[in-house]
Length: 167
Image (cartoon, rainbow, N blue to C red; front, side, top):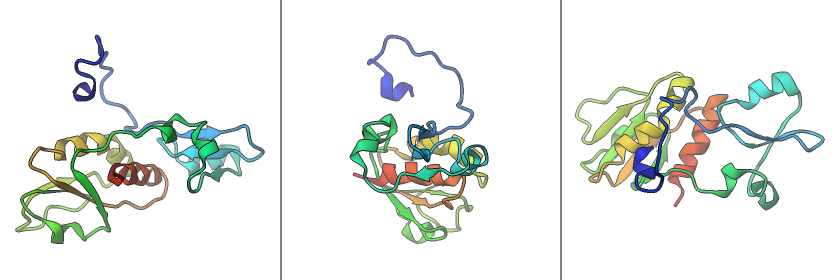
């Protein structure tokens, strides 16, 4: 995004919107059973249809972190605090300094910003970072995000949301 790179680089080539919206899936194929080091645009379920058995990195593994750039560096996170809640819980947390990302419509009487995210995970992934940037306005102190099911592409979306919520 221009906001991140303005004044840092001399030239930015704009290739348009990303078809997936998330960074790539990183797989360590040097092991007897390949291991997903970072979930991404290619869900583990799709990998299993081609590879068969495949493990997934669980927990903090310094050796695996040294092999995956997606685990070594902090990715984009909003300035505002990100609070993850279960679907349906965001409406109770409104206020003038609160913004919400939800797949549900804005409830009547809700105070604060409300961003409706696509119900299809592909659309959600494409809109994720733009939505976080949009909601990260100067007056917003907390972005409340209703979680998504951790299946398929939802697993990678949930991973990026967890990272954004870490401080």
